[in-house]
Image (cartoon, rainbow, N blue to C red; front, side, top):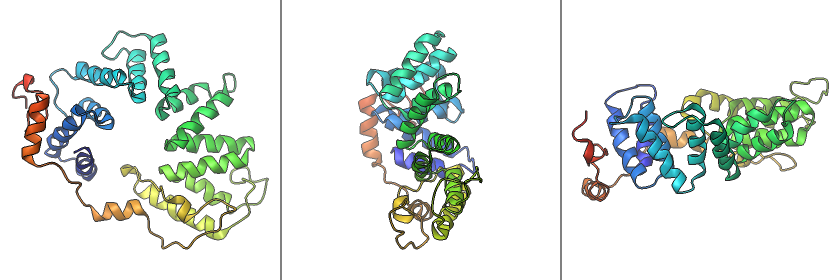
Length: 290
């Protein structure tokens, strides 16, 4: 149900058809009610954007986060930390908020790791710890963290780490990281501080990164990624394999196959078990809200 909701939502990013919002909300609510962590996050996003109806928007968002915390989900600690820092639905408590965010980072939440990395990155704070945090986030698919720490490593002359981090960024969907590697494989002059990464010039590698950067930039609004990057342009000393110029993400996007969802009979059973309206996914206790 979550995957189908995501499919509907992606197809409506440019159209912004209001008729699609209730369909997305319905499926997301069912997925969240059955413990899908990403659906929990997306439901809160829908509520905050006015794309989902809620009897008590702020209270419902807090309840959803508290459910994640009860289940020890790292992202729940991060979001509760943000709520406490801002006083959103809870009493403002910066110290408690920071503790929640640190807990999330310790549990491996990439958003929390990136958040702490940004806070600690100034030279008068703890830039080394910041780099560690951002690299950990990048290794879990946080493209901005990977891209940012990669550029920081390159600026500091730690080229091996820079290339590694930027490669992570490309896999996660950073067109900017791909652009940096395109330049890196096209530069052997140490005086070129923008592009130099102590790499041997390789025209074909540079060309492939250029194509990847273009692809990721074109579809940025859909959050594309290149998880198969090492099969397209692995880092040296690995040799370049043949490549047909295709991307798995783009092939799946163009195929546009809707993920399957349960039958209406099964959805009615799921709704009854959780006290939900099968037509909307909202709690029956709310009545007929429109």
